[in-house]
Structure formats: C-alpha cells, structure tokens
Length: 535
Image (cartoon, rainbow, N blue to C red; front, side):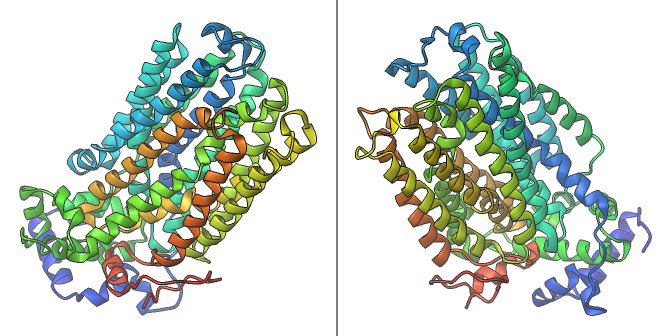
C-alpha cells in the first residue's frame, strides 16, 4: 500500500483496520504473513542498524565500567589524588573508591527517574540525543579533573546520562524490533556494554604506566558519545510513540523503513488498536490515541493498580532489576582489579581483569543465539545456578581456612571462579532482565514503568558500589563473607526466575496483556524451547 499523506484518508484507514480487529487477533495482525504462509517476512537490515546505533549507549556505559575500575591501580591516578603508591588502601582510600563508583550510579538513578516522563513527552530519539550531550560534558569533566571533588562531579553528570540511556535505549529497541527478534536486538545493548568494558580494559593495559593514561580511561568514550549523537540524526522516532501522539502518517513512514511494505498497515493498525484499548483501562476512558495525547499518558499511580495486572508487572520489573544488582555483578565489574591485586601485583591485576572482561563479552553471544530459542525464563534459571556456584567457590577459597593472600595458586582459582560467575551472568541476568523490562509494560505506561524499574537498578547499584570496597576489607566481612552474601542472593535469583516470571519470547508487545492475564505463580523447570502457556 502506498503512503497516505492526507489526514482524512489516514483516519478512514484507521477506521477500516481498527474497528474490524478483535483483541485475540493482535498476534496475527502483527505478523500478517502468518495467515498466508508459515514463512515470516524477511527482516529489513535497517532494523539491525537501528539496534546497533541505539546500543552505543551500552558502549558508553561499558567503557566507563572497564576504564574507571582499572585506574585504581594506575600510578598516575594514585599520584594525582594522593593515594599510597605502594598499592595499600587505607580506609579513606576505600571510601573514595566507593564514592567514585557510587556517585556514577547515584547520577544514573537521578537520570533514570524522570526519563519515562521525558521519553513520553519529547520522544525516544530526542532524549537519546540529549543524553549524548550530557554524557559528553560529564566525561570531559572527569578527564580534566585535577582534584577528587571535580572527579566526583564528572562521575555524577556522566552517570545521569547513562541512567537515562539505559532505560531509553532498551525501550527504543523493543519498540522498533519485530517480536521474533526483539530479544536479540535488545541484547545488543548488553553486548555493547561488555565490548565497551573489554575495550577500556585493553586500553588500561597500555595506559598503566602512562602518567596521564587514567584521563583516557575516564574520558576516551567522549568520541563514542559524539559518534552516537551524529548517527542518531539519521534514525526515525519510535512508531509506537508517534501513534501515541496521534502522528499516524509519521508512524507509517517510520515503519516503512523497518518493516516490509506488506507488514506496515497491519502493524500500524495493531498499534492503534492497542493504544485505544489501553486508553479504556482505568478511570480516564479515551476513544483514540489523539485523545490520549490531549489528556496525557498513564499516571504514575496506574503502575500500582490491580487493573491489567499492573501492580504485578511493576513488582516484576523492579524486582528483577533489584536482584540483578544485589547478586554482586558490579562488585566484580568495578573492583576486580583491586580484588585481584590483593594476591597479585598491579600489573597482573590489570591483565586478570582484562581476561574476566573478555569472557564477559564472549558469553554475551550465547544470549543472542539462545534468547529466542530457549526463552527468557530458562536462561535466567541456568544463569542463577552458575552464578551461585561461582560465588560459593570464591567464598570457600578465600575463607579463613586458606591463606589466600599469600597463595597465588589459590588466587588464580579465585580469578577462574569469578570468571565463571561473570560468564553465567553475561548470558542471563545481564541482558535478559533488560529485555524483560522492555516487554512487560503496556504502551501508555511503558515509559514510566521502565523508568521506575531502571531507577531501582541504579539505586542498588549505588548501594553496592559504595559498600563493596568496605565489605571486603579484612576487618569487616572480608572477601569470603562478601561472596557468601552474593551467593545467597544468587539462590534467591533462581527461586524468583523459576516461580515469578512468565515467558515473553515471541510475544508481540500488543499481546502482552494476554500473557499476564493467564499467568499463575508457580515452579517452572528450564525449557529447551520457550513455552508461553503459563497456566
């Protein structure tokens, strides 16, 4: 069907397609070829381009994680901020390490909270571009820091942009992607995060003995943020956001770039239908998406109502993000070099960290291969088991029974088991939680729902970032007690994923309500193929 530029014709098309649909037809409508043949329409390559460009937000975050943690053992960094040059970390140094990590996460928390409202107000694309500008300012301040207070300020500003990006990127990707590859494309962000970590960790190896090398570790990703801003100029706004604002013709143009021609009108009709049905839930009954634009999107309070299972969806989104952080991943991501230097020198710590991050990056490809084949729930279950085993083994090897600080062989095994933990996280709780949170909310509350769940993630990332260097000090929990704490939470991760999460693989966003209507809490075993029958 050719493009329709006349608003009256657009409204006639809306009436023809929308009012002939039933709620149960949404699945078929979103994939019109399913009614004609068993072969889905080919995926347009531009969809992949959109996902990769948006995933640059993950690359910015990953470079920061991999770069900042490594600076703690760099001579130039320690000299600049007056830390002991012998590698010892008195309590005041541990406090500053905690603030460097946690202020970034605190900024991310502050950036994530208003992002849902802003994404609904100005659109996904514009908010992504705005965050690129903010991030560039933040990392420039970090790279130019001449005292610890200036570094703190840059960390907070850069974190503010990353917090918003972490929410908007996954939302934008999920709304642009066809449902059959949605999980794969949203996982692109996690892949870019892990690649960014590897990139920075590798750079740290060469920058270790350069006096100003730490400035590159903190500010090198300014190049990436500028590149992302430029590439975003050539992308379209989310069609679902455009429909929500009553801009049907612009939505049609955007869909034509990411869908086959024969899919466009059917998907547009499905989005319109879903928008209309969502407007009828709650006290504010709206007939069309144009009326929603006039009155406003869903309210924050709607996230906690029983209608449309919203309270449970909110609990699921926030609960999964809380668990992703409390299991200890950022303790390793931020502080692995410092932990490794406990039983090796600074040089070996940099190389050990690089090895862990390479494994982290490579393991993310497992998600890309399996997330649509095995589904979300099975990957989360398997990942939780491997993470629990890895942290428990680190706990045992670093226990008071073994003199691990003076035993490099034990230290090597601790690195190996940390790597095992990271591998299992990288293909499960790392990417899959973000995929899940991008899927479970309805269109009119997706921005606010993802904003709240992302804020939960960063809130506990802040806590973990601040307390970890204090927790593993010998006079507190020590290394073994810290990893025992994380291991216990990994067991809870398994219970949560086995009982509380419905399978969403292959389900159109417009049909997600039906999944939650039929879902019942209960024990589920890992499946080799996703099973959407949650009764």
